Amino acid sequence: MSEQYVLETRNLVKEFKGFVAVNDVNLQIRQGDIHALIGPNGAGKTTVFNLLTKFLIPTRGQILYRGEDITPLKSAAIARKGIVRSFQISAVFPHMTALENIRVALQTAEGSSYSFWKSGHSLHKLNERCMELLESVGLAEFANTTTVELAYGRKRALELATTLAMEPQLLLLDEPTQGMGSEDVDRVVALVRKAAQGRTVLMVEHNLSVVSKLCDRITVLAQGAVLTEGDYQTVSADPRVREVYMGSDGSGERGAQAPNQENVEAAQ
Amino acid sequence: MNQTFNPASIHQAIVEQQKAQDRKKMIVNGVLLLLLMAAPFVMYPVFLMKILCFALFAVAFNLLFGFTGLLSFGHAAFLASGGYTTGYLLSNFSGLTTELGILAGTATATAMGLVFALLSIRRQGIYFAMVTLALAQLVFFFFVQSEFTGGEDGMHGIPRGELFGLINLEDNLNMYYFVLAVFIACYLLVQRIVSSPYGQILKAIKQNEPRAVSLGYNVDRYKILAFVISAALAGLAGSMKSVVFQLASLNDAHWHMSGEVILMTLVGGMGTLLGPVVGATFVVNVEYQLSQGPLRDWVDPILGGIFVLTVLAFRSGIVGELQKFMRKNLG
Image 1 (cartoon, rainbow over the protein chains, first blue to last red):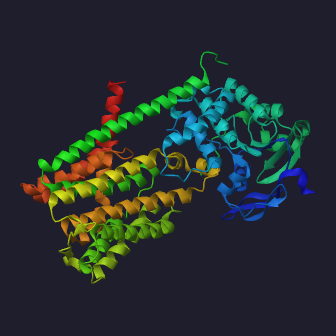
Image 2: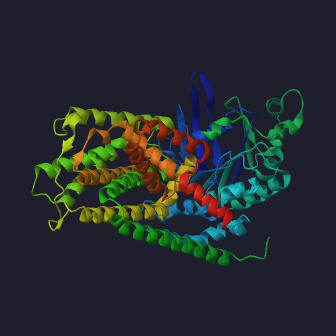
Image 3: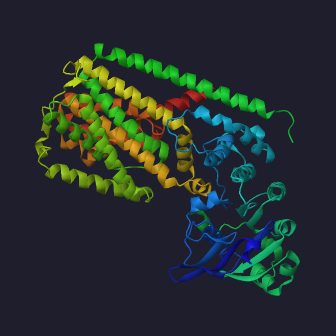
């Protein structure tokens, strides 16, 4: 039964001293979907992400990847299985060039990452693949630029290219458009759509227009629990969603789209 | 999309750039080597060897601090355990040639480094520093209490012996060239490590550890390896120092020494290859010059002042500031 789902959680619970951040969450991510996880600030979206990738240890519950129980695995092992995450705050290696950023991801599979006696020139054979990936996100001309010098939107694009270099089966994107201007948002939407071909994507996203454009399926979290699930029409028509997500003051989508600065837990 | 560039030419440019950097490194290495080869004809060899030993110690420390981002506050333990092991073996087993004694000292420090790393590597930042300090204090206590170290008096009269049973190391010039050869080999090794595939991962871990984890790297193992290599080289520095001075003392195990190597690295420039060498040279010279003059009781406050000044005003250290200056003015 669970074979049709790439990723599944069963009764996932995370408690911090007396506070239940994630309460009995059952997620089912179908193969090939772009699946969104939405909800108001503090709903536990990023915590769920951290649980899935073991940056936090679940208090109870199970995580299954293609039917296999991966709950006991560590972060690095989960990444090597093909579940690769991005971060809410742009996660790049700031003092390496764009090309070197991607090369770090390629080195995982290349197998020389402990070879401290080898010359750095041995890495040049990975450069071609790096250039391809950079081109795919429109960054080829910045290959030799130190990453700190890139604009914010480009850093996010680089981060996505780095994640794709891992050839992930399941891509976990934590607010890929957070803090971006509208042109950058459009570009990221296009990139995510392209990246999702042949893959499954689970993304936390605040920008509902992005969600409506991209996502096949949406899970709404509120106060650590699943409120409802379905496609955009179903979810957006649900009065409970309107209530928790947009607040009772009726400030509407604008409030919901405001960048979320509160979820500092991602920084860990 | 932009049509004016072509990925192949960018790639070519990157390879060329790295080759140019390698050439520059070779030139710097060559000049440094020539200077060090000629140095004992102008300066007292034992003083030069002191500088080289501390420079190696600082280079080892910088591999961990500057290139991996781990601040160990217990590196004195490796310097001292290398020194005591070598001293003990060479003093008690006359059949042992010097290089074997030094190897044994290095091996001891390596093993101790592995134990330290396994116990401390999961801690972050200040907690990591505190665990390494605590472990180093345990080692210090062991050396104070043990009889073979000579306690407060230290271990005296360690024979320099003969290298490979052939070259008499009692001769200062022979000893100097041996120390120089070891130093150059270690310096080149660290240079290689930093630019190796492994060095790239260390860089990545230093700059963004969670991201490195999310890319599938088991970061603890990479850090442990860096820690062990660093401890090994620090132990080697201690072993050579005990042979050069024919003395191993508690000074080397004291936490002052762990602090001093931080000072050397910061003053010279952490995260640069040459920084720790320049820093060690600077600190050893300042200590020596001051101890000769009327300010001999003021060595510690003056070094402390230099430390504060470095941290406040010249954070990248002598070599780091110089590199910045050259980049700004020479393109």
